[in-house]
Amino acid sequence: MTKVAMTLNGKKVQADVEDRTLLVHYIREAQGLTGTHVGCDTSQCGACVVHVNGKAVKSCSMLAAQAADAEVVTVEGLAKGGDLHPVQAAFREHHGLQCGFCTPGMIMTAVDMINRYGGNLDEKTIRHELEGNICRCTGYQNIVKAIKSAADQMSAMKTAAE
Amino acid sequence: MYETNYHRAGTLDEAASLFSKSDDPKFLSGGQTLIATMKQRLAAPSDLIDLGHVPEMHGICEDGDAIAIGATTTHSEVAASELVRSKIPGLAKLANGIGDPAVRHMGTIGGSVANNDPAADYPSALVALGATVSTNKRSLPAEDFFTGMFDTALEEDEIIVSVTFPVVEKSAYAKYPNPASRYAMAGVFVAKHKDGSVKVAVTGAGQDGVFRVAAMESALSSNWSADAVADISVSADDMMADIHGSAAYRANLVTVMAKRALEAAG
Image (tube, rainbow over all chains, first blue to last red; front, side, top):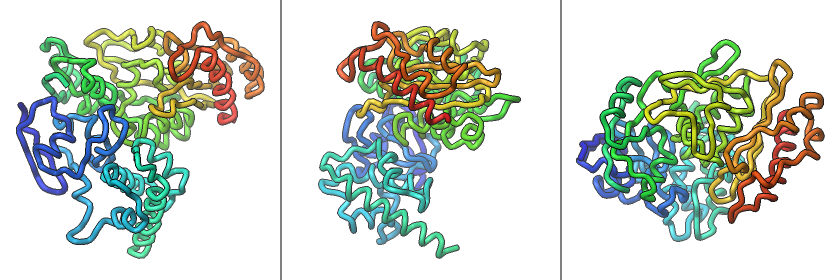
């Protein structure tokens, strides 16, 4: 057992866990945040994507101990008070989900790609960037639409703020 | 996953010492292969020595007429590096096509090279560019480093510290990714070196891992164009065959990917 401490959604947390504990299990079981999902056992589906030190990673492919002392953000950390994050709002607006199981990973991946590309996201880039996230309701069309819309809106907000 | 003990090394010496004190240890870099393999219980190291926090193993710098990339530098860092993009564009492009964005944020060049998966992308770049692999014990040329499928010249306790790539005149990489895993079914790296020599290295297709195509290299040294390799094929006898593609299919892919790489290289 090791004491693993990190900043989770802006809050200092810690827990005693086995060294083999995956980050996703630390988040779900030790910290009780079940928004991050486990959709496969082969690191392919992307339902478990979270941000570690600002970068989207698969929390099923990383030990909690590897993320010790890091800043981790999960889907629960996006909304501010009662206001949805623009990406969450866009997924709702554009019906970017059906069953919703892949959605937390889709949203964390989308926020990461918008952070990196800003308003320069075109459909082709979005689809390439979504290679690590699988939706089995075949909802990609609306997911792509939602991400494009959120990227445009967020870059317009950024321009307005400047 | 079987039980394991996690250790975070702060220096190379500490990593080596932690390794020597453990029963059946493995070095952990980005873990994008190792953790997945441990989850499947196909690997069960008693101890994991995390190299991700050793400062001298990380980063990209210009080193004369070469670029040195620290072993724990991630694929996304290589892909985004202005230095790599301007001096060896084929290498940046290759890094940007490994796995998916989340994998590229964790996976490292040292980890990929040390694992020498026959379908990994990097080995082709190291061989075609004539890279040098530096470890905590020695330096060796890429062609001596890769010794066969999942096999390298590394000793059990040897750690890759960096990989140095000479800046070349032209470089490009084209791969046909497996539609599910994104691993290369055939990936071809072409490099025109400053002395006029050409190297063509293939990953994903060969039974023994990365290999060079001498016939393409000699054709390209007098005529650097996609046409020069259009009629050159590799023998299907040496290709992998599995549910994703037969040996003959992969052999054909090698020629097609070589042509695409040359078109991209310009």
